[in-house]
Image 1 (cartoon, rainbow, N blue to C red):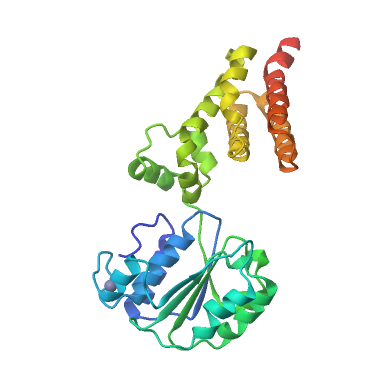
Image 2: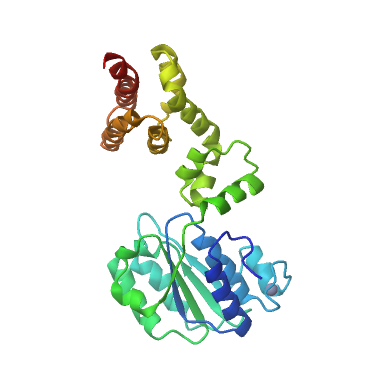
Length: 303
Ligand SMILES: [Zn+2]
């Protein structure tokens, strides 16, 4: 079976394995589902199998697969945002202008439009005609984590494939086996929220996340000075928003033991809002930490 590098979503794998076996494809697919759950990886793997000249095996050495593996396949195209959006000029230049040209190596040509919800309205309208009457050999895979930004006219011309989040147990297995985590905590797993993309993105700061989790867990046993000292890792301009998101998950976990941790969450959200409107990082974190500390320690002593 193909797609063995992709976790979960077995129904979708089965569906496309069938299509591949029977060489029976539709002209346009719309891959939907949360960010970071493997839609793009899946689309790329699917494209490779569609273009393959042989048995569509993982380790195939046909001309098509060799070109594909070296990112140099003349019948395969990825359209990404340029700047903030995918513009109409891009759709024209990268797709429409050459779409009637026949494939060079394979039987088909495959286009992936990644984050297709970033297409401007004009770009979407421009694509529409191609979706209505695509050349016989064309397959277009649109990918989106933000379905409501796509025009209904586009949606109605594509076959929607909805990807599910990766179940916690499968994600856990993947992280422990493939990424060799030895210290995956339930809180961390919750934070990853079924998204392999989030795991990979957080991999370099995993140790910091674990340290933050420990601070929240032990905050009631710490004196204020060590709390502030240990919390120094949070003062990190590049990662602060992710850290604060993670702290919220930690607080929810801790609230299962002691409800007053829930009262801290508004302070974190307030901090996030301040930072998003460009408040000073240091001062915002100072205030936030002080309030959290006070909430779980001082207030309980008074009552
Ligand atoms: Zn091949």
